[in-house]
Amino acid sequence: MLVRELVERFEQFAPKTWAEPGDPVGLQLGSLDAEVHKVMVTLDVRPEVVDEAIAVGADFIFAHHPMMFHPAKNLDLAVPQNQMYATLLQHHITVYGAHTNLDSAPGGMNDCLA
Image 1 (cartoon, rainbow, N blue to C red):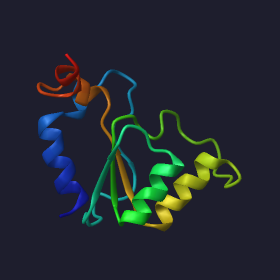
Image 2: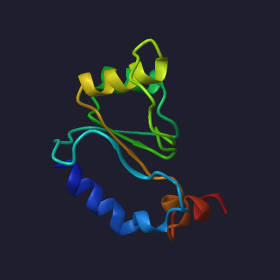
Image 3: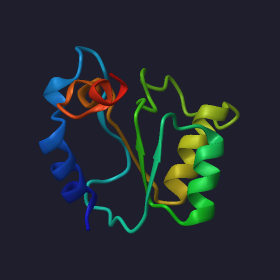
């Protein structure tokens, strides 16, 4: 399956238009044309999550909280967040974030928590 196919199916359930203004949901890193073989689901994308994704062979990380709330100002790899981005790219791991659009979806996070 291609990333675009997975994203299209998910966005039928929780369209990006349901996200709160300014919430950077959607494709965070990678390519819509990449192949998806194994998906990892996480609350936050952290270096430990990336290490686990590499260890289990995941090539798609579905995160509730967007990995990037603000654009990177530089790509200095001495910055741990930037190094994490480089590691994701090096291992061809796509990252998708669904935050407030998933919260708002019927049967989504808010319904589950309620």
